[in-house]
Image (cartoon, rainbow over the protein chains, first blue to last red):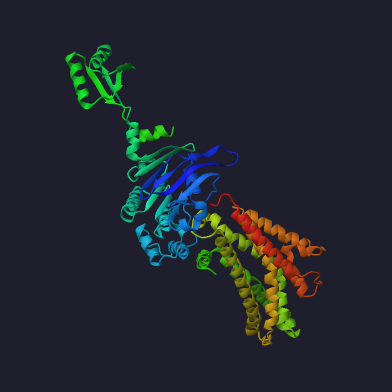
Length: 300
Length: 258
């Protein structure tokens, strides 16, 4: 079951190129879904359509398997949101900001103090939200999103403005919510390193198109299928012949020998053969990509 | 009234706590009475003349409403309504409002109800202020008698009801406009232009069609300065309903809701 799903979502703002092109987002229930992409890729537009803040032009949006446009009120009861900059009433205190939502969600009033403690803002007293630092505002916005114990949290760049400690705290909190309460989380970010320790699934969007969707392991294994072994040595021609004699097809590229990464035992056997043939090995490496490089390749 | 609407209304009522619009209701309601008290202290003869008229309360209320009806009430309406809707734009909170599990109709009409109740608050503060403005000079200046005349509640209520109904079209129109624009200056500028236009056209034969002039027209009618050629009550209610539902249609038709 998907707690959030879009089918063939396309959108174009007037006078501009397409902002979204056939986005099919599938967020499994119980997952932490990292929605990644560079600035302007279409993350916020997708999330705003997902929540009904922008009227959809083409495609379908489902939350908890129900079409949003027909069940908006019903499904939003189970969704906590934090979209872009904090949505707080600056002339009200943290408690009052939560109190007005408590009236709408009809959750117990005791939840207000609970979520303030949860996000680390238990003692703000009569201080107005306008006097809060950006980090405090982000925390309060998170408290707003958590107030009614939602089943799905949709967070657009929630760690903006937080110090490193704050980022770790929020990350731990989200992990705990997911693991202990089964809350599904969609978290958007333009930085992979911010979410890679947190997410179970990712969707990568670039220029309005979904370029990858799946688990982190899927992403890595998909990109590791064609890894090359690169060898820098004293005799390129002879080393290519030795590799060929062992059944490995190797090519000389830019003064180095390059081949598809063989099994480990083949690498050691090849190395031994080179040494026995009097070939000096200067460097032996793979072009294995780390997650960050894969991400950068995807959003090119 | 269903419980979701009550929850939505309660949330809207909390939002106006300590907001500029809520202070404006108090300041706007007390402005004329405070000015009256100052005038009565500087020129006690003016108050004595009202005492000598034989219709003390009627005269005092008419005098106070004169200042209010022409400029202060319409201007206060324009400002207060724009400030209430501006709370959402200024705080970037439309997206929070529109991702809450409430019907759009509940959001629209609960905000409107808050505005109507704020108007009632303004009238209460204003009427209480007038009453106090009659007593303060009597208590502090020995020459001025106490205003212990019979108080015709029915007449004062009718007078207030007339101004209240006369205020409704401008309130609904201003609400409709201010929901459409993020820039505070647009609804305020439009509202003020409508008020000034109404004042300029006050002697026009079709002025009964200009909703921004209704409180001034009601004053003129109530002092019989001008014959009531058309029922302002019907026109006011008609405009109020038209602007309210047109405003709702425009509100729900917005493609971007935050």
